[in-house]
Image 1 (cartoon, helix red, strand yellow):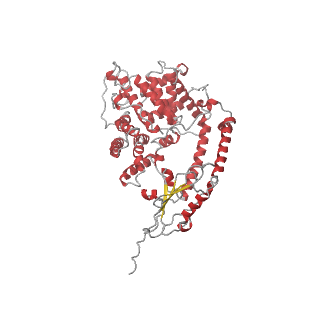
Image 2 (tube, helix red, strand yellow; image 1 turned 45 degrees about the vertical axis):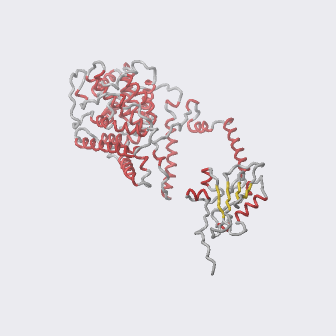
Image 3 (spheres, helix red, strand yellow; image 1 turned 30 degrees about the horizontal axis):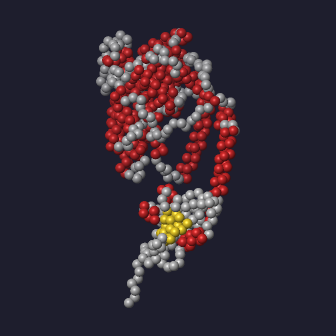
Length: 591
């Protein structure tokens, strides 16, 4: 009777033991990359059905018999792209149940050899297993002269250190080449901020790129470098680039220009950021022009900042570059004045108004617009020190006009705080538990003055000059919770919480869209609708971005991807309006 044929193994397993155990793909190197990254012992199992050794074992025996302690390149090189029978990889007989015990070839983690210790050792165990410890032998690489390469790298590093410590600063040479001689006070260290969840593009992996996409990315890189060079050239003359800022010009433009710019300000930004009382400002404005030389510094700065902000929406040409330079001077003058010693003219309601106008101007004209979160903290603290965080009914008696202006300005400061927090990916400087100031009344500016003793607020369905601020104030608690959730370092984002907050923002958007559409003939302009939608809708992107990039692997998060795309498309494709388009072009930080 013929002997029963032996069972045959399905196919030789060429992966190392650790990769087979973890059920991951092995690159079959010596050692493999997975074992190197996990600092595990890389072991290959070799099966033999006869006394002959496999090629891999023969190489190991020859290595042990003729060690080369000073030449790491003597270790066998394994070619992962070749077949096992001619590459020196472990070869197993198809008979997996041979009486011959398996041979285990183990490779330890690579250690840089030294002339005294760069040897290999083998040990035959009782069960016939051959254990080869190659500690001290550099694994096979495509560049065998590792020792000489390292020496070359070390020499180059020493030369770089010597040149950097003794030679001139190359960055100073570059700045001098473009901007002329520079002082130490003009050299600014950049790239010192931490990019957190606001840098949401870094959360997603690399997307597939075709030839056309790669070309576009290369062109974008070139354009970005050119833009940065132009930006540095434009900023080189600014007062902040020198230690002192002498000769700040506070001269106003011609009266006709000032009137037009101030009117633009009240037609656009004052509807959202309630900083000034129209009748009171125009009275101060006329008093300023009656005798500009005798006007106080606070009044002069207030008028000039209003003119500056309004000029951002005015169509300008190259001839207006001198006026734009004046605008920068006014902004720096306001910043310098606010940074001075805290005297009574700074710690006042007019000082808070100037502070708000200055922050808004910085964002519009890109004067440190992405750093206003730092200034917002000072503004919030100053406002709280002056009691704006408490409702006027808890304070000593004051006029109705003063109480309403305090409520309006506090709501404006809160809005600036949440917007700056979103831009900088930093915690908001205020929480809902730290103030009890009520919402402003829904009235027009002409409905109250110093002599008003009773004020009747209109229904929220009726559009007034305060309606835009009230709409933003209604969604403020939701947006504050979003910022708190995104900045919480001790807990992970919960998707149900994300969906709940998202639905609240969506509902708020639906409500104010309906209100603005119903009052389209009451003074609501496309600029107002675009600005309001931008200030609210942009909170949806960082809220969903951490889950949107997972939608490709988890369909559960497809809603986040859709919401993020819809919000982004709405922001980049607003209702056509020339003024809003110009604002988004020249603006920085918030805009």
